[in-house]
Image 1: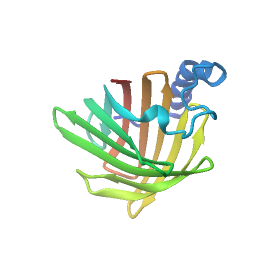
Image 2 (image 1 turned 30 degrees about the vertical axis):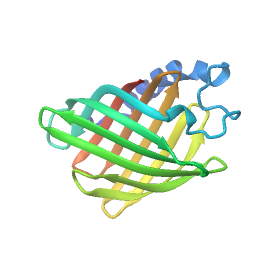
Image 3 (image 1 turned 90 degrees about the horizontal axis):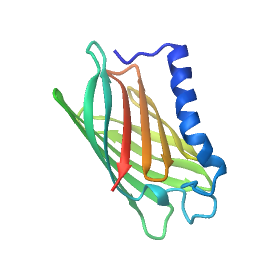
Image 4 (image 1 turned 135 degrees about the vertical axis):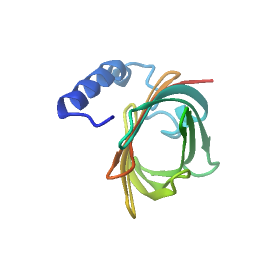
Length: 170
């Protein structure tokens, strides 16, 4: 099961921070203030794998594809993440708008019909998002450095527990 203790979450956060922190101070920051949109580094197709946690089941390995589309004339991003496991699939669709670093929009997991409104913030190396709606509460972090991306989704009070992905652009 993907339920983590506080120390496990702290350890994973430390590891991710060590991987991505150097990007926050280097010239290779992919989500920098100089770019027209904080979404620019995400545009395109990403592939990779990770783990999907389901309540009352062991975690499953997933293979995933994420596609990000930028909307012309508006600081908006459309995100599609499709993952397949031996036992099924998960598909996340998001529409995210940026207004001076404050995020808003809509988020949906189509295979289980979970959806909600999202809020969040642009961070130096990615996005931090909270989703709330009906019976759904989830946190989603997207970290980007060069051609690598980490997506972490934690579901609260759901049959889904979490989704952790490491993807490469191209």
